[in-house]
Amino acid sequence: MTGSSKTSRRLYEAIIILLIATCAVSLLVGAVWLSPAELIQELAEKQPQLGVLIVTDLRLPRAILACLVGGALGLSGAVMQGLTRNPLAEPGLLGVTTGAALGAVIAIYFGMATEYLLAAPVMGLIGALVAGTLTFALGSGGGAIALVLAGAAVSSLAAACISLALNLAPNPYAAYEIMTWLMGSLADRSWAHVWMVLPFVLFGGIMLATTSRGLDSLSLGELQARSLGIDLGRLRFFCILGTALAVGAATSVTGAIGFIGLIAPHLVRPFVGHQPSRVLVPATIVGALLLLLADIATRLLHFGAQLNIGVLTSLIGTPFFFWLVVRLKRAAP
Image 1: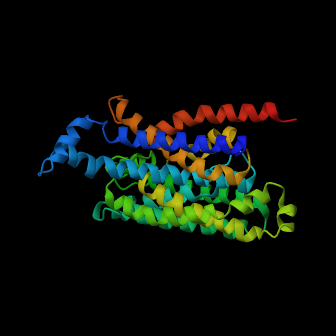
Image 2: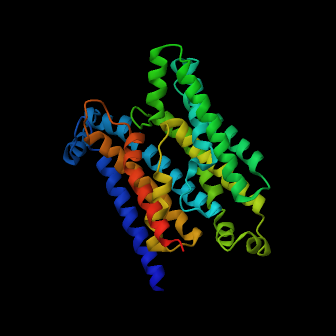
Image 3: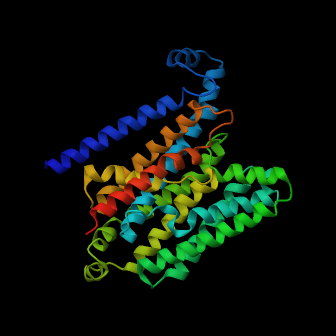
């Protein structure tokens, strides 16, 4: 076994153990703190007690959802950085995140979210798929730059529509609901949200995982990738559709959560190298770990009102983004 293989194996073992430990901690902390001894004692009893109900009905689906969403963001970020060969790329680059946000905002604006529990997630998923389709249609055949520009155009359009909905909100309650949703949150999510997100995240993740060979070839340049038999149109289609399914479904349930997809790939590259295929799996695990840690932090930090997870990830991610820009600037010739 080579030194690189040993390093990768140790990295996998470390982050998987850390992820499992963090999941266990997330089941215990919150407004009501629980101890493992109390839970074991309650499980031994025939009648479920408060602690078991809190874990099974509230915290366990929240932890699973954090892993699914964080994993989807980490994997999509690694794929986007490989596809565009841009270390500053992240899942929202293709307009999928903003499209999902617009879909959910439409559901809230027209009152559908108050009538049906899953109206906002379903509309968010539809918005993500529409945004991804529009980005691919506009940028198809024009290379990575055209794809990025198409994503920027779609994001701008969706953001303008969201601003319009806020401006014309029928009542203050609707405006408040829209703003709260846009800040991102894992609070009050149930098993229904987990089951809705799960198939889309898994199918989208599988599509993204199949792009590993194409991304490795693309890192040599588009001409070299074509000479190796890579269909770039098919590769871009899989990247966009996989991102639309995975990130769109995630965003449709949790709201906009930024920077996880940008940070996770950069955290693992020093250990696995810059080959895109070697980054995908560890970036997925680290993305899940980062979002779990952020969710725990929102429960522990108190500023009067509850801190939304999207706000926290932005506060942490923005300094990292600045540091990354400065590092790239120093490394440039």
